[in-house]
Length: 375
Image (cartoon, rainbow, N blue to C red):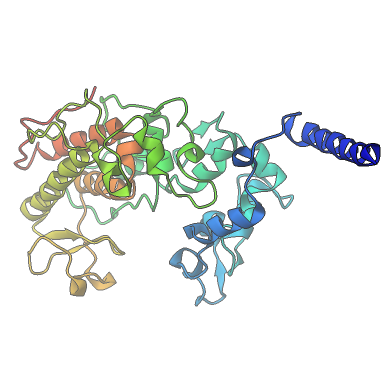
């Protein structure tokens, strides 16, 4: 009886061992190291913005006639557009050939197809191609914005700095651009002032160097406890912004050398808005306010320094633009769309904010006496 029991068990063992060789190179993984189930992955994906069918990111074009997503938007706002961009449909790669139907999201197929799996390079708005990225190149294709240093430089070329020009307008980098910010000078997403040096890729540490090292590839969430191993100050999501290296200078010059580097960036950013508003009033004669929705810059009709709800409308869009104002507003908005700059590339963020303030300080009063620019 024992032989009749043992042999079937041995047979099952060898069959499982053979399967392990095929799937895991001969290693039978412990339960905690085995790949996630499809159900677990699907549940994560369902909580991410990439799957939100009601989001403006995927419904903005629903009421248009015809209801379709144009070629310049569909790459990142639909399944069909990204597959077209990859050339997975047999078309030319890195080009979206036509408008696509509405109704899709960033589905599994967007990242899980042969072309996406082999993708190792991302093409940035500046025209720069960065290689050696692995599959996270797919993340970077959509978290890179749509404008760069070159767009701003081309728009203001050879124009007097403080002269209003009807051909100028606010240049919007677009939204959620942390991928490009992380590469700094390598991708040149910020407006970078001539004659200044800027940091390139912020490497972080070897174990956290790609998008999916920090962000779950399906939920896009980060796990604060993973940060805490190096940054004991992190006890949860509410303390992530308290991270600061002991060697971090007092960039904003406020005397606080214990606050998180995020708050160093925020203080300089707030001073920049004040400088922009002073410049608009003193040199253009029209008060300006920033809105976190479109249009981003409006006339501050009551001069209270903020964009009130009744001021945020197309008819009240800020109308008068000089090269100096175009540069400053572009960089100001970029920081708001790079909310994770304190993790992705803090030195780069401080560098271009400092330089923007320095440029404005040539014509308006800006107190930068204690601020420090990382070199």
